[in-house]
Length: 273
Image (cartoon, rainbow, N blue to C red; front, top):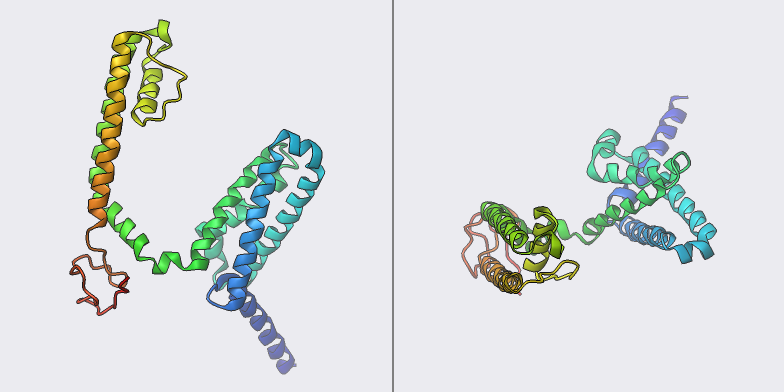
């Protein structure tokens, strides 16, 4: 009796371990293959939701798209249950970022039975495409990604100062053009004028609001020049930051000598290209 029970327990554990390698370990051929297949299904489900939002497509192929959506939902539901079943820490997976996204990917379809229209929230499945970073090992092995994170961490104070200065500039320009143009020329309020300042400063230029007076047009021209100057300055500062030494990917040490082949702190070999 004990042997039968032990054999059954071994079979149960081995089955969970096998599923765990498929669903959680992208380093194995089966795990990588399942991630790629899941990636394709996620893309297809997002495309189906996008097509369903187009009236002409929905009118002609609405029933097909709804059927596909329920099929995708069943697949994702089964996958989520299997992940809970085979996870070494089910509660930890359920509370993790990807566990939460996996659950949110199936809720809108079932919720649409009670609240019509909520199926539009299914586009949140696009967040599951972040698994491509795990499939391609970009998070762990990309020095470029590490360099970018290092730059953001090092420059966050300068970024906040830049955002604050830009906010003050937009407020000043918006107030100025509001006083010059006024509601009679479409600048009905200072917030609306600030919107114009942002659009003009970023050189987007929607054209839904535009100055009519000569002084207003002169200010608009100056704002465009300032916008281009800010873009050039930002690119220049970014290029200088990228030329700085990249930190070691193993020990995260930033004091690495330029052109070195090995990290003098941990001995990690850099890949020279």
